[in-house]
Image (cartoon, rainbow, N blue to C red):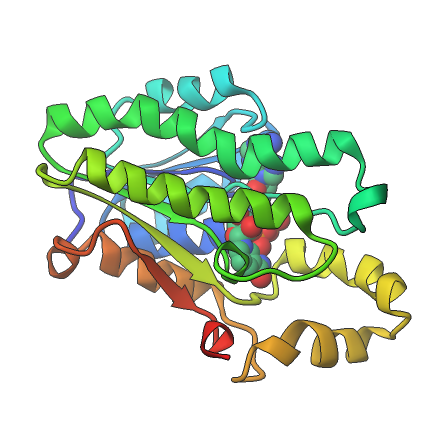
Length: 256
Ligand code: NAD
């Protein structure tokens, strides 16, 4: 259904971004993968997707903490019909101890990069006469938790950017929406477990059950394939009038 469309997914050599790239490729879109590294294994992921799905898949190195890199990614991609702003990092610490450089990096990667890629991509979508912006926010774009100040500020920010993008494109065949995942067991979540264990003085299993999934009533992690499927829906004709909104894929978190 997405044959002939080109999707650029930031931060897609791992986790949710990679899962979204796979599902968009399975739906027929050509995909551009990205991260800040430039290793053989990064390019090999793109080759595997191309071989298994038959689409064109490329990997383009660009550091989403740098505005020029973010804009250059869209230029190097050539076409950009579908933009998925997914790159993100996390750091867990109380506000008084929160490292300033972590705050700056999280705001740059999780929020400001999406401003730059969107600014570069909208003219391409307008020229093509069709476009989809899908921002990967979080349940933490709608609610808060202690010790994640920068992440929560950035995720609430990207929900706001999504709404503005939708209004600026409202009369055009372009939509902008945010997916708000609950907990998905990816390397990003895995990496938070030790710090959260320290904050709460709990062991690994207790952190997963009592801290992470305590707010996810389903008591199950969401999957990267489910994020990919939601993104494919937002790119479909059925979603043409879905714009400026959020879709939670969070096992009931935001219903609590
Ligand atoms: P992940 O660590 O597996 O993936 C993050 C991706 O971003 C990786 O591909 C990484 O290489 C890339 N990245 C990091 N810094 C970058 C930079 N400077 N430039 C370019 N790419 C960079 O984590 P994930 O869980 O898949 O997270 C993906 C997105 O989903 C993030 O925005 C995250 O906030 C969001 N999210 C995740 C969860 C979850 O439970 N895993 C929940 C809600 C939202």
